[in-house]
Image (tube, rainbow, N blue to C red):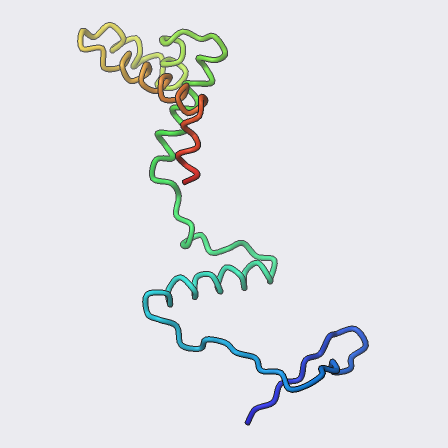
Length: 131
């Protein structure tokens, strides 16, 4: 039967426990939990070694590009810029000059939706990301 000594680390002496100690660990995990627990151990190991957790376990948010666009449009709107000025800053003057007066209003709608979505996030919808 294997024995385990617990070393407190202070004076270098084994701890004096009142009786036998039984340490238990689940060595065999259910298959549906195995991957996630191994990932957690990998992250814990990295943190204990003062390293960054593996980036493959934290993929970038799929909506990152769209959210960055929305937040930049909101920033321009809050600063008082017109929709056209926001479009020029985010998309470029050349494209805005070419497409701003298009009868389908695609570019204008794109900016309006971005500003509207940004305002919604600012007014509380950001909480949806936390759930």
